Length: 357
Image (cartoon, rainbow, N blue to C red; front, side):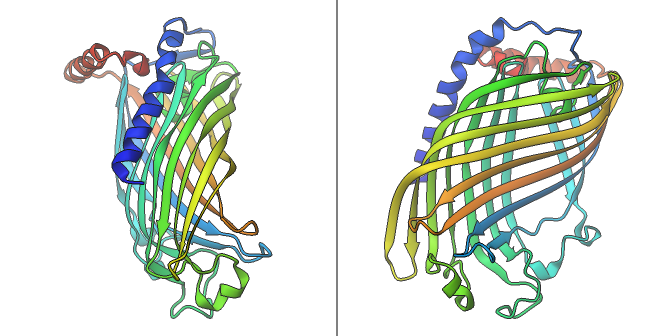
């Protein structure tokens, strides 16, 4: 499927699913006995970020799955936020990260993952392109010429959106652990409902499975696969608060998707199959929050389970993001509020102001 068509379907799906939330958000009133927002304070502080993407292929007996992983160093950066806008910049720590080694090869990545977090909506927009993987968990394999089996030719792409309506936005804030402009002072949780649309693919110059291992994998000759997934989402999120300041947040959402996989072999043969795919999205955070500052560690994980045209085989494509941040909430002065408020008015004019609350 051409990328332009994928983007068009994605926009249509996202806007169609989010539109009803506009009416829902208008009726939500924040219960300040449960959480407080500081969206008119400047949120500023350092952060550490680690991202990994994995493309996995299951073997016949599941004892030797291939896990191709990106080789990305931990990054040190700065997060700045005010009202509806939050941005961050970072630089890689290179060999200071013990998990990052040049022997694992070079990964070229263009990853843009945006979260839309309002009182009544949580949306994840996915745009991931990774090229260059190494075989994780298999150091010094006898079928590799070096310390790691490196595949600079393998490229994966994921485009899509997962949108959820938050049903208890008056007492539960998803912003506190992940956007840092709120303080959840009492324990609370919420159910969520929504849907998703995902398009992804993986390709290599040769078969994904090394020739020495072909007997262990029923889909050993595949060098290209493409998948499309769409369906409803249901989930639950909860924040446990101890003495107003210490908090633990967990979120689980399950996506019941209809899916299609197209596989192409090095022989030129290709196969297509429709099936059901229960995908998974996880978030977690633990930290300490006050009116003036917040310290938090968090993880966001999205896992897509992809069927093969051979029943005994399947794939998995997942990404994990780990983050540790320390934020201060300070006065923003005059210039920053003026610019951000101008942007808010422009977005309100377009009819999407409800996403910024």
